[in-house]
Image (cartoon, rainbow, N blue to C red; front, side, top):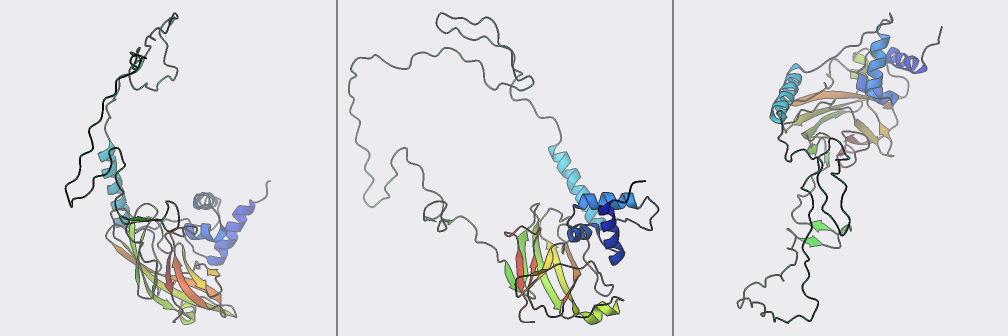
Length: 321
């Protein structure tokens, strides 16, 4: 009999320690792919282990997502007319004393050749002897005090103002909108675009540090030298695209030394956690729990749609706690 899969053993060990966790959280903590974690847990649940794999969702958010998908399918359904007729063999015009032996088949099979067959072109050049010179009229002079038109053939000036050579750090365009604020403090709302074009606003409502009394009141135990921290955030979907991820999936704490504290898989009944998905026009709030060494000093709360996306990273300063 084959031994147990080491990856399955690692999954079961983590679940035995936490008791309850979402699949995205397990994948993040173990550094695995979400689909791999879901498939393994579903398979393990059929082997007789006391393991239940469930699904939790926002019914209204799922219905809105299905309605948006159906509207998109109806908008893009239907046959598109073919712009050009199917290509076939076409005669090749003779060149010099040689002649084509027959029609040339289309070598690309189903791909269409756009445009018709080429034909002999008449000579474009004139006689080779000396040509007469025709003087050109002088350019029209602008009226006094009026703007000077650009020379003929010159490229139009770019819209907005530009400074510095293109590609350099000093290059700027006046028609570009200024960057949105990416930093704030407790109580600040920061705007950001999601990975799928969602227009999001995230509010840092509260940071409870320490939150040991809430942690222990929920039946959990802290080890010696540990403390709990609870962060309350709200995410508003201002756009028309559903936000389908967990709002605090990559909500981390940043210490004064630059180290990052990831969220815990613990959830408290007195401080409800975030749920996956936020429908367009809705606001969803939740609490995130962290367990960290008692001596770690925190400097910021940081949110990003994924860990390596620095352009969409939001930061709230909490040094004044």
